[in-house]
Amino acid sequence: MSSDSNTSNGKRTGKRITIGARPPTNPYAEAWIRQGDTADLQKGDLYTARLTIDITPAMRARIKVSAFTQGVTVAELLRGLLEQSFPEKPQ
Image (cartoon, rainbow, N blue to C red):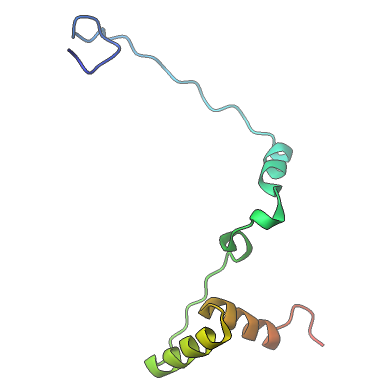
């Protein structure tokens, strides 16, 4: 038995089926779909920029211990510290 479902008696028919182009999207509909419920937001939806810095292994260890003792992730801890130092509206 042939694994190709478009054939009869195991031989290719040479007939191709084309797939049409994707229809244009409505930007308002796309925005509405993506809007969703804010409770469903993932952290990737909120934080879209990545920052890389070089620190010593000792400092990294201190940051990790501090985050653990506060019950937060390292990223959450550092975001909080950066937000305190660089508020959206300077005072």
